[in-house]
Length: 174
Length: 226
Ligand SMILES: Nc1ncnc2c1ncn2[C@@H]1O[C@H](COP(=O)(O)OP(=O)(O)OP(=O)(O)O)[C@@H](O)[C@H]1O
Ligand SMILES: [Mg+2]
Image (cartoon, rainbow over all chains, first blue to last red; front, side, top):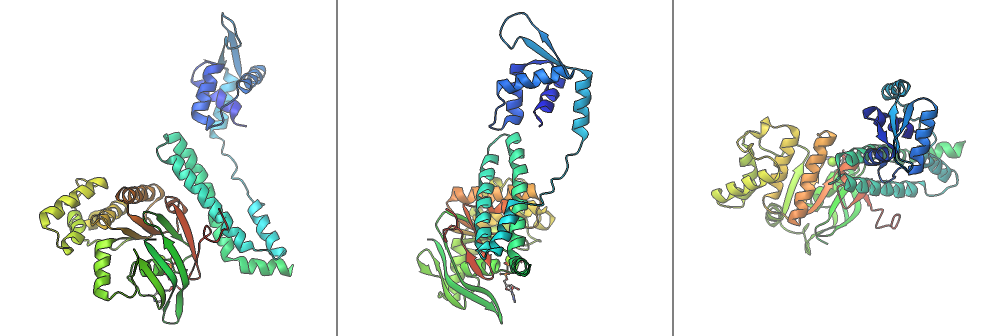
């Protein structure tokens, strides 16, 4: 989960109250899925327990009278995370692949399925294009990321469509 | 329907390129033609635009048979009602940007002063103001494609035919070129038919069809997708 690290990173910028953290998180990383307040405070509680942040109570009442600051340990965690590459996911067993092979095995219309899948992916590409148009740069870059993944699927669909005959022979022979 | 192919077949010698291909495009629509290399996309586009004559089948434009017109009327129609954008090689490299954009107007006997003004307007709309005096051989790929779009739109065509208009460009440049082409065509109410391998480019269209082995598969027409 990136939520604790994102909150830590925001705290490295400046000490904040839970409310401000939630607002900043939602603005940069929320994308229509705002962070519930409960999760903000439970995450901060865990980070405090692990010595990565400290909570300083301020006069007044309500749950938001704590100002959180990052500790050297927390800083270290952010620094490590930011330079650590994420493993390229080994999408070896995709749903798409399973559907195609099973369809061939059972003598169903695998080509028809691939056509429909292609059209569905293309529709998603159009939705993402729409999101990019006129939206802020952060939305556009996230949409771009999604588009490159959808494009990868589309290429796979085309390559598989082109090799469907050979794949069918192989599946039936085994 | 403004453009329609009905059961169009076309061979090169003994190589069949199109086999009873069907495609209907409504006025103002932006349609992408996708499909593997060699499947017949360019041949289909050329037949729709009246550049090639089908061996069998019919091509219709705005309620008229296109494939049975004589050569003179067909090229007249191409000049007045159609605009073209290709991957490369369509601009005259020795001429300036402005001269290239004016060319179709001058061929249509528009007066030079008027043509110059129209060319300048279109260069501005394609964010090329200031480059009018440059020779087109001295432009970047993205700039050259924008000049080609200006030249395609300057005659206010009903239909723009584009074959891999972003094929030689990187992702961001291609996207910019495509945004301009589709955005301006929509402003002008022009129909766009664009051949492309690129899903991003195709995603700028209202819908896409796939050409496979010389046939058009239209997933929306066959009910495979709603
Ligand atoms: N001038 C030609 N002479 C002979 N055969 C041709 C000619 N032009 C195209 N063909 C053949 O016709 C078929 C369809 O070609 P076409 O150019 O329409 O394909 P395409 O889908 O546009 O391919 P690409 O994506 O590579 O541009 C191919 O088998 C091709 O080899
Ligand atoms: Mg081609």
